[in-house]
Length: 200
Image (cartoon, rainbow, N blue to C red; front, side):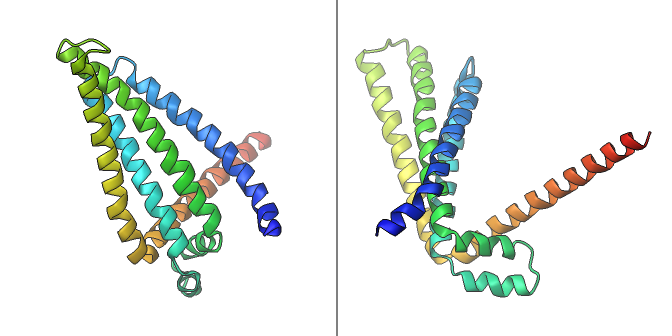
């Protein structure tokens, strides 16, 4: 038991640091877009973060339930993304924690914070002030609606994640593969450019 706890400390620390950085980034971006934004944009921001949270939970659960041997077989056939999918399933606790706890929870917190802007804008539209019955009603209704959409969406996607974990993780692996290809191309171009400059 203690051995498991000790072995989890390094990546738990990394998760904490990643959470802090991502929370700062998401909160900053959300605040940046909310400032002076209209009702439609504010609602869109809320919905985007709800969607991010749902997707994060789906990938997190799929990574924990997917079978590594399927992806190893695919990787032997040189299927793009299979190698990355194998890595995901091999490190399921890390990826599950990242997508469920980091991405999912941060998105939930930020969407909740972003909904405050929507409440105030709706309050202004119906000429109600903070603390009034109308304002409280809007706040309660919107919070309940966001909670219902989030929980309902996660419930549906978790069912999908359990039964369709292989295609979900393979798709995630393909995205990681694409990122690696893009990074490789950019690195190569940067190296080629610096090499040309050094030759002149």
